Image 1 (cartoon, rainbow, N blue to C red):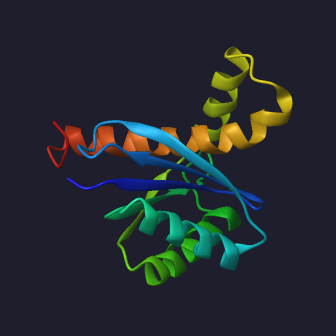
Image 2 (cartoon, rainbow, N blue to C red):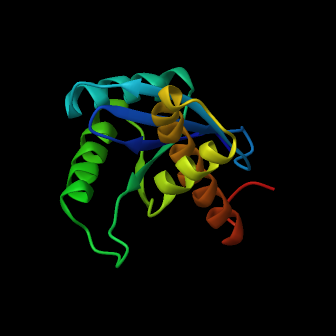
Length: 144
């Protein structure tokens, strides 16, 4: 199994995580500062190439009720453009609560406030990817 890159898309920051080669564990990678969707696509496509990712998983921000709003539409447009730019398959994955979970974990770890936002985006990407990997494994699709 090859590496999988995950993305927590934000307006100004994009959190990234990558799997190990066996597809079992998600690890935080970077938090990118971006100036818009086009810049986010360019930077993430570059990271996918650098990490030799075979697949990119983009967090899909649904409401608590599971409804897609404007942020989900933006994520879908980003994923469409990213798939073209990176020349890799892109899958959407429900990211409900991952940013909140990431912030909670950072508060519990007592991270300084000035680093918390970027760390939260990266932590959200880790949570998105780990839940994706766990679901694949549960379906018998990858990892040991």
